[in-house]
Length: 120
Image 1 (cartoon, rainbow, N blue to C red):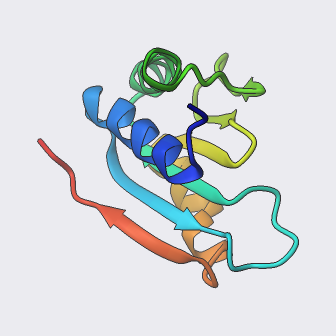
Image 2 (cartoon, helix red, strand yellow; image 1 turned 135 degrees about the vertical axis):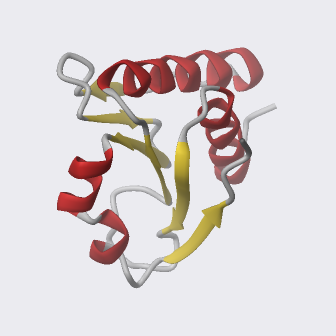
């Protein structure tokens, strides 16, 4: 069974929550013409080590539950901003100061934003 974009985004959120990612936002870009994907999942981690752990968790959970693998992963070396490209869903994992600087939620203000409550 092929996963849907919503299934993939939810699985990614669960992978982020397993490693205590916080301020998780799912931006639905499907109603915006000419976007590079259907959804962004945006998350913060408190340190470069946590950012790396969050990316690893997303990769493991998506692979185990949906047999989904990213097409590309960028930013693991310095781990201030890791981007994981799953085609229809792109995951952005930031350190708080990097996230504030790039302000993705404001950049995509036309998107429907779903705030995921921190579960810890």
